[in-house]
Length: 346
Image (tube, rainbow, N blue to C red; front, side):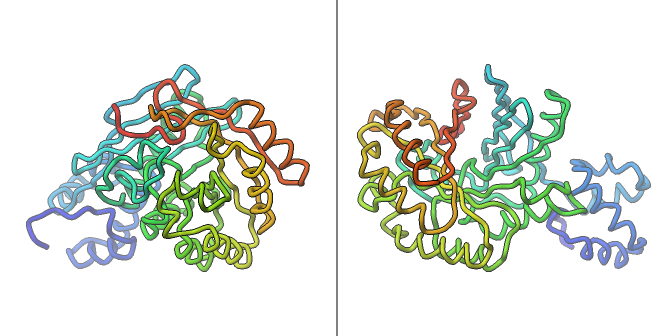
């Protein structure tokens, strides 16, 4: 090795075992270190108390643990917590803890900034700096689990990849992080309690289907009419709805699991009968459910929350057509922690 320390979490368990044996140590030390890194979330070698001091010094001489730091924490009046998460290179992302009376959900980021350009989302206005590594995603979950235990005396129950970034544009690292989160040698969480939300990247949706994930998929839809969707999500020019429909059919054919459509209704944009009819038609492609999400302002006059009458129209007609629909009320709006508001203001 050269003089520059290597991030030890880039090593697999087998890599660590081999490294120890090649340097005159017993192979099982690699197992111990791996468990400290992933199951116990150790952020320093000194924390690895079942290793001798000499072994810990050896690790410290050769490796570094590039863990995150919660640089700033804000608490909403509704109990939501937003974390400004500082990365090892000084960049920042945000993650959110969302508590309800029965569960705690972590909303985690996958990119610094975002690869896409949704007009209604504050994160999309940030330049995409880089993808997050698997351990940086994993660390967000560990931090929120600790907050849930501290403030609510219970472990984290659910995870949504709905923070900063497009998860499918960081495919390899996101799936590697989920492997660690769900693995017996990691946090051991059920993949059924994880939802990956995409704005719709057809090629990557098909790739995900081929990999047969056990977690849930959500599509940030917001309009089932191409001409309208491209105005609020300009990348729809590259990934039109026909391509997304094809990818959804492929997803269901491969996985047999329904998709959740996330849908914000705005005044004067997608609040007409035509919009409702288009969504109902879209919902017949594969089994699905729809979450109608409250709009969270990002100080853009073009976007305004639709009237209760418009929301009721969507809900009643979707239900009439036997589509499962939920109307979601936003959490953490007072600290800019709600959907679409993450922009590193802190």
